Length: 174
Image 1: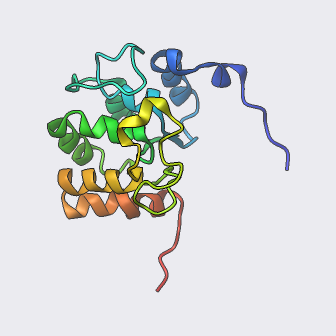
Image 2 (image 1 turned 60 degrees about the horizontal axis):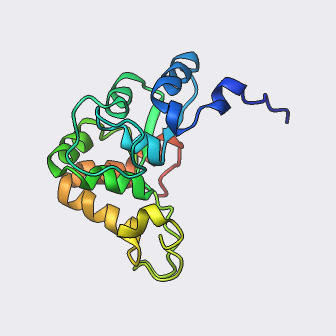
């Protein structure tokens, strides 16, 4: 199987160029599915984010590019598996509830928590100094708690299970 190399333009942007560079990629490749994940994606839910912190705190200023792009680009989805998604959803509960409802068909729950027991034991977030607020906690369990507090059962089911099955074309077993 031959693969086309990633263009230098697509590979060159990092967190500092995310807000400017990624939208051009979304436009250039409308048939490609992108799943946003990690720091820059989730920090940019707030319009006032300017690369000042990996995990920003405080109330979200409406109009962030991540929020806008999820609404504007059918090929963009959001992965809620990391500390960055958890941080974005816990910094402003009112915003989180609206965001989850607004993008209920575009969000996917997963877990990149490496704890060994579902309660934060083992490595968990201890190797990520910026994520120490979740050290000793299971990121997946904490994020599911946010979904339970912030979304209706129907929205929660889509995010936790249904959207990934639809997007990845996973058939439900009878």
